[in-house]
Image (tube, rainbow, N blue to C red; front, side, top):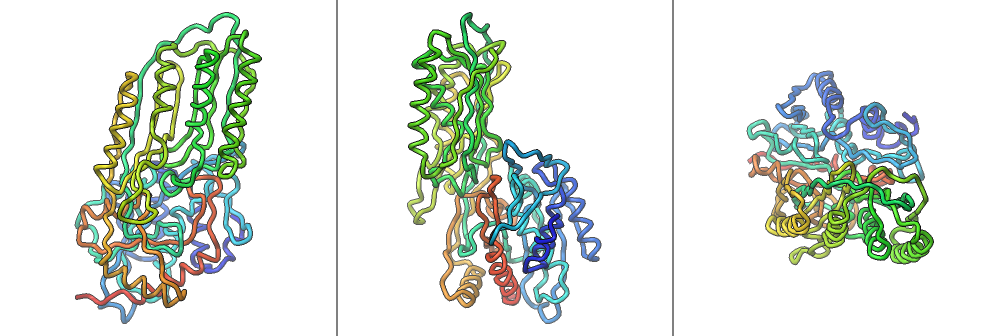
Length: 487
């Protein structure tokens, strides 16, 4: 781990972040980070609990003179999104994140950084370890599996926490205070198909879409970024319509909550169309690149001759899949009528796999309005059922309804304005914060969310601002000093 990270200010925060990033912590494989966090709490002599789903709770008494303040829950999630550049050799299951400083930014070498939500976790760790930071009684809640299902928040039972205020440290713009978020549901379409022999006089090609920015499928969904699965399908649709292209395999995207950056398809074309196919594809590629020249300047689309595959999809199923993927909504579906510039409902076509007689399409549909979430999910379901897919909904979680009259919101607004001379932006975000879920078992808890500036979350371009971390740390410390007294 680079010593330059540990020398950054505030050292208490960055040192804990460096410690945490040395521990592999992929979603659904959090055993090592759970053990790490439990050892951390026990070494401090603090009450440390692991609940039945793997969440870790560490309780620290109030510092002297703060005993009459309300107990607070400080909450962040332990897992991180694992994305890397295609050329990066890295094993997330065994290696710690390799970080470096780039001007005002902390970055990782070809992978996600884990600042989402590692900086929140590190903040709480630094406060638990401190001996000179004034604070009320703290219940530190470290949840698991936030990124791929929020099963930690869903599994947290009522009665484990006594705090009256929850500080969720999982947002990514330091001038924003979040009071609401979107819920989500996984939409998965699957079906089998017959594989056919490759016709005689065929030529094999590999089509590759890469170089896209990717990003968070909620926070970045309104930025006009390219979706590799949709771009690939556009190429396949054109070639099928004009030249009878047949598909052998498709492997596009990765995680549901990441806008897909790459897709690879192995296809065949009749050799009589070989020259015309390449010429036509170059025209289509030029059109796509021109459309995305501003938002995706590094987009690469390559078409290369390769070996003939052994089998291809049956044409009827292939035609249905291409048309369904074209019709399936991707991106913003509806903007909020109640909060300016807030995406209400969206969908990310995150994963497309065609191989060995099986189709798998995975989407993540988000909305701050439950009925709208399922309206879009049902639209997707209908699209894929029309081609004979089995469509399932899974991992549904609720949104967090904004409370503009939140008492802790008033505390944070006053502190922020005093420290920075401007009023913070009070927002709801189009991402899946855990507050809505936690609120189902703790409905009387006053909740707020904030954090330092993090860019490119869920992509290898993820980076955390050093200057913002300093601003955020100062904000946290004064919040702790100004938690209201018990009723």
